[in-house]
Image 1 (cartoon, one colour):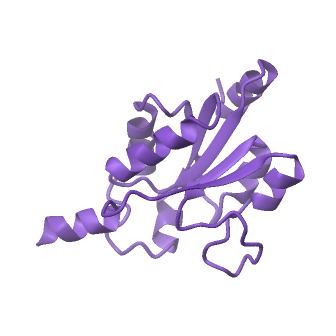
Image 2 (cartoon, rainbow, N blue to C red; image 1 turned 90 degrees about the vertical axis):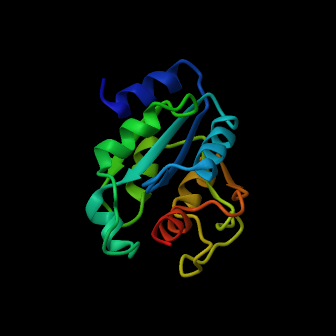
Length: 157
């Protein structure tokens, strides 16, 4: 079943849909902790995954992504917390958020749900769409010392 149809089915059944997004290139403890906390906010967790070209546009570095989008989705879908993944190619997940219409939009603690200026790097893309439908926008604290960039740096030293 197409993921958007599956989400519609879950919503029809009364499930609370949580959405987050990211690159999820090299999965680490911070990711797993974050995804479990996101899933705890609802009945179903949908993860938007940046396609390979959008990862390169994000400026993550010339070697990124290390894993292709299909592989990153397969790893995420193996986690108990994740119910579905959807790859997106745009620079932001706004179109995907609007299509999914989640009940809860979640990002890491480096974002701030109260920031309303899209020029602020702490701004959560899609917040207005979710809040406008009566949904919630939540920032989950990051797990200190755990990031993909730090993992890559450590592996090279």
